[in-house]
Length: 310
Image 1: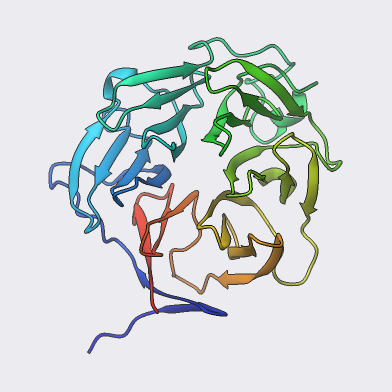
Image 2: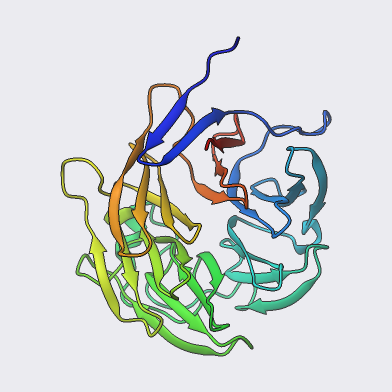
C-alpha cells in the first residue's frame, strides 16, 4: 500500500498527485505559465516553450496536441476558457491577448502586437524596480497577464508587468473602462498578475506585488481588499485565482493555497505547503470532478494535480 499526502480544509479534501502528465518522450519538461480546463475536462497547459505554447491533455493526463506555435509568442502568461469553449491567451511579451478556438484558430485579438502603451514604464530597469517607473494606468496593453469573459459577455484583462491596470472590453473588443493605476491604496495595483470572475460577475484580482487580493463588482467598483495581515489565511504573493461556484482558490508563490467562500467573499483558510510538496504555483484551475491543477514555472513537475476526495 502506498502512502500519500492529503490536504484538508473543512469539507475540502484532496490527495496530492505530482508529475502526472504523460509528456511525449521527445519533449522536455517546460515552464508552465497557465492552466485551464475546457468543458470536457481537457486540460490546456500554457507553457514558455514557444514551439509548444498551448498543450492539450486529456483528463487522464495524456498528451493530445500543441496549439499556437505559429503565433510567435514572446512571453506566454495566463489562459482561461470562454463560455463558447474557446481559449483566452495572453502574450505578455508582445502586448496582445488572443481568443483561440480549441483547434488553435484566432477568432479575436485585443491589442496591437509589439506596441506597448506609453505610461512611463521603463523595461530597462530590472524587475521589480521597473514597476515603480509606471506613472499612470495606461491604455491596453503593456505586458498583459490575464483575460477572462464575464457572465454578461464583456472581457476583463489584467495588464500587469508593464501597466497597473484592469481593463474591461465589450464582447466585440471595444475598450469600455480602465481601472487601477500605480499605488498601494485600495483600488490601485502594483502588479495585477491574474483575475477570476465568479458566477455573480465579481472580478477577483491577484495583485501579487502588493500581496493583496482585490474584489470588484461588474461595474468596476471596489468591494473589498484582502490585505496581508498576520496571522494565517491572508494573501502573500498571490499569483492566480480560480473558482468552482462555491469556493475561490488563490495560488501563491509562498505559504500555500488560500480558499475563500464565493457566496460571502470571506476567507476560509489555507492549504499550507509542507516541505517538498509542490502546491506553490504560478497558475491554478479545476475540472468538473472537483480536482485542482497547479501549474509551475519550475519545470518539474510541470503540473501538480490535487485529486478531490469525497
